[in-house]
Image: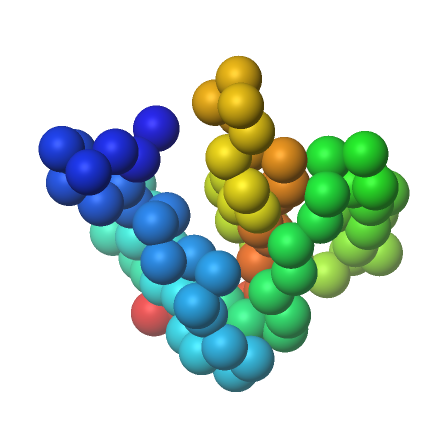
Amino acid sequence: MDTPQAPKAVFFDLKRLKKDEKIEVHRADGTTAVFAVDEVDTFKKDAFPTDKVYGDTHGKAELRLITCGGNLTQDRHWDAGVVVFAHLTGER
């Protein structure tokens, strides 16, 4: 949970990513997978598109980054999720 007293968590600015920005995933074997952002969306929990987020990618290497978003409810839960959709563009 992000709080004024805590440093920003790793996904704090996830919603600010833009189309075509690069995401690098550093692998245990020393290689790096490079993904390009396709879209960033915020979905209310009661309308979360489970199939779109977790469904079949039809053989394409894709990445989903998911974090809390929207508004903080009275019981201190977020009412939405932020999802970044990205596809593999290469590796090095």
